Length: 480
Figure (cartoon, rainbow, N blue to C red):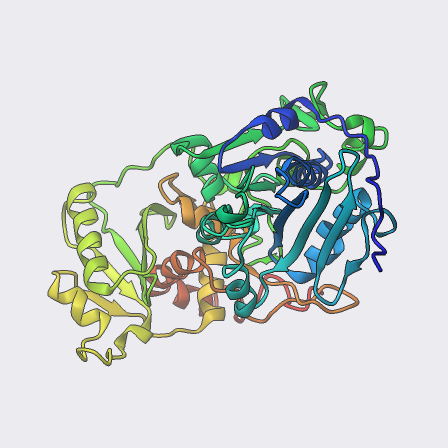
């Protein structure tokens, strides 16, 4: 007995201008970026259904399709993505949702006598086995919800799984592709690179207007904002209260940018005060200091100390998945071409004294073989390292900040501005955080800068009677 609805239900959807362009595109990969509340998830839900209905019927009159809807975590998939889908295609009209399988199977008779047979699979990427299963599916198309949370490699791999159902021998796909939506990511994200810089063939990106615009430091309603008719009055203005300017720019203005989450390692850092307006040049006659962090993501920070004790961080070298031999060559080349002169004073992580199992050489051996005479700091105490940097940030010399970073130190700036953080613990009650900062692509260069300062004597300065009475944290990890 067939208990599925014998006729289609009707929905009314009028796409905003940007969404209409998004839906008209025939690119294999299509991205839609916009502020909170701009209707991105609804647009993608309706778009998948439109493509299912447009699938050509097979010999038996069945319009068959299979889609995957992907989110980074199960909780977000269930709490947001799935709720949006079911708000457009409720179970009482579209058919029951299989919660145990996270699948919605639609079997609907259509007015033209054909039948819609559509399988929609909801998949999260919390666990490696889920990723493996996802990348073994044969799909018509896929929707990646909040794509900024997923790696580009997975999005590209999804493109290899679409246009496989129905098979060519069964009539093939009338449409196939991967659609993506997201709130704005940062400017160093793969989305920004593809959408604003490379613009590769087969990709189409669409950017919705922000709900607010910034005019001379203040935020105002944007008359070009989309989906306002489906939002409460003054939706964006009423949500600004208590939000940082960064948050407003990203989530309400729809601009690329970084939003701080968790507790920053350096609450003392003030971007307006500690970042120079233009690139800093080295000061002749002063020694150059270099700090190093090792591992598979080695990083270097370069700085000078002025006679009055102020620090100028001039440059950085940040790598990923690189061995020490190659890193040493890159660092030597940077020093030779941009900072010629006397040999720098190089300090590094004491853990670099450990020998590799492959050739029994330490990172310091490899550096010295490349002409870089580095030495380990006397301590690897993370609290002392943090405090040495915090002391320099908090220092004022004749009204000038005790530490300034050149715009060349882009990753170091981002890390100190809050991207290097203590992750918030998922517990009830007051905010609590992990005891150690999280490891990330920002942590390595930040730690390299710490080794530089500790090696150059800032650690001893923290422990002298003239400094703080004892090593402290600027803020308790518990959040108190």
